[in-house]
Amino acid sequence: MTGHDRSVRGLSTEEDLRALYEFTDAIYHARSADDIYASALDVITGTLHCDRASILLFDAAGTMQFVAWRGLSDTYRTQLAGHTPWKPGDRDPAPIFVENIVETDEPDWIKAVIAGEGIVSLGFVPITLEGRVIGKFMTYYSRRQSFQPQSQTLAVTIARQLGFSIGRTRAEAAREAALSDLRVSEARFRQMTEEAPIMIWMSDPTGHCEQLNKLARDFWGVPKMGWTGSIIRPPSTPMTLTMCCRRWPRRSRRTAP
Image (cartoon, rainbow, N blue to C red; front, side, top):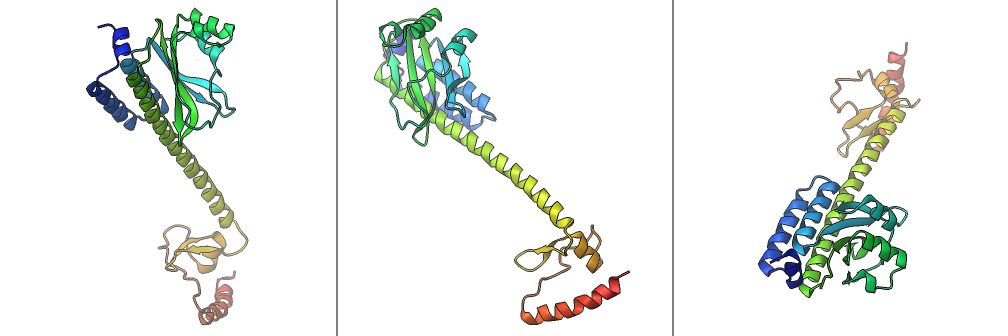
């Protein structure tokens, strides 16, 4: 049985499930977006039996860009970047399957580019995240293709898994970026408090001091390194505040040069 014959007839349920399981396992263990794209192209070409395939995502400007592909020329990708039937954020669009590009209403120049690549049939399968379009994957065939319902359902399932995985990767990247920004912010805050011309300390909910700035360490005679974190407890009542205010001037006189 040829690849064309198998794609027309569709896959058996057992083969579908095995392919989807392997794909899900691969993207679960993927370490990068490129790994996810490679696994997706493997399952797309392997189960949908297309000659070539590609994955495109909207960039920050809302233009559909190729991020991964198999068997496409640089010229094809350059000329058809940005071509898409959907806009960013379109909700739950249906896939589009074209049996013969020549029979469509696409502009003549697009038909010429596609035909020049040796492509006859195409599948446009939307990739969604939380129900909204973020990109698509494409299947390409050099012969006229009859897209059976089972193959269409499989394509949509692959796209949903791919969208979920891309969303997870983006969330992890955003979390790492937020943590990096937080570390930078904390470092700047510590530097600012360290050099402030007033005594500053920070404590945990139990009252144990977690940080003393330079002026506070000098006042208490505490070395920069080696203190235990329980040097100072902030006053908890008006009485302790009054006592603290009385003691500090005497301490200041004792430590003054």
